[in-house]
Structure formats: structure tokens, C-alpha cells
Length: 190
Image (cartoon, rainbow, N blue to C red; front, side, top):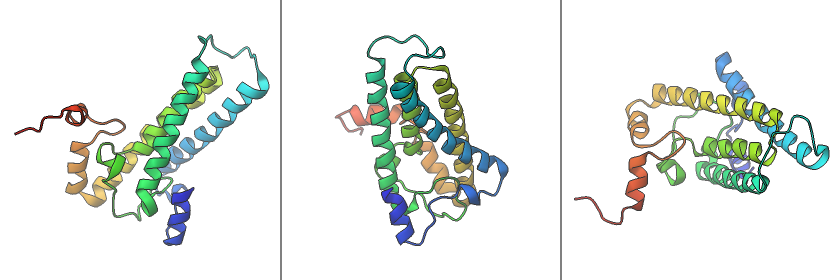
């Protein structure tokens, strides 16, 4: 919520889903938002209130703990990305934005916030292994990929070459393998 408050103070509307120009943009944004809410609600209800259900999948012991770890890691990445974006953070595709963040997590990954969401979806499936969780999380992941591609197309259109160079050096959801090797290698290249 911190980026939302910071954006409001700066006079920026952080929710751009309703302002999306094309129906596909609106569909991706609304689908992602609804998937997040439904996945969270279902996971809580399923694990705490509903107990054993016929829709539950067989899961080895400890899977819920692993799911919670993945959800927690995803939330940490998601929140860190939002904080690093500061007032530039938006929910949905915003045609008014003219700048893009290239520091922090964004120096390695173009969409770390979406990477965090992906971890939340995958962790939810592990935490609450049931058919509805898998279906809604899958829909969320598809919407997330669509949203990222639509944002990239818009940023390429508006920013051109600087964004194309940024795309070439960063991964969409995970660092490029060459970036991972550079981060691990203690020896500088000549």
C-alpha cells in the first residue's frame, strides 16, 4: 500500500486498469486482479474452514509449509518491487507513464512484481492443493504473462530504443542466465 499512498501524494492515480484503452488490456488487468483475490480467498477458506474436500489433490506432507515459504518469498519480491518503483507503480497498463525504473530488482528483471505474483500463485497451489486453486492460479499466470507483454509493447512504442536495450539485457520474470553467471563470478571480465 505504500506505493499507492506515495503515488496519491504525487498526484498520480496508481490504478490504471479502468483507464485501459483496449479491451484486451482491461481483460488482462481485471483477470489478474480477480485471480489474486480469488486465489487468496480460496486458499484461506480451503485450508482453515473447509478442511477435507473431494476437490483436494494428493499432497505429500510439508507441502503446505513449502507453499507458505514460496508465498512469503513472492510477497517479499512483490512488495520490494512496488517500493522500488515508488510513485511510478501502477496497477494495470498506464499510457500516461513516460518513464521506467531500472534500479534494484528492475536492474535484473523487467517485471519483478509479476514474478512475485507468480510465486504467490504457485505457492497457493502448494499450500491449498485443490483443483479450484490450480485453475484460478493458472488463469492468474496467463493474465500475468498477457499483462507483461502488453506493458512491454506499450513501453516499446513510447520509449523506443532505450526500452529495447533494457529488454535485451534483462529477463522478463527471471534474470537472464548470463546475468546469474555475472552475479556469481568473482572475477571481472577483461
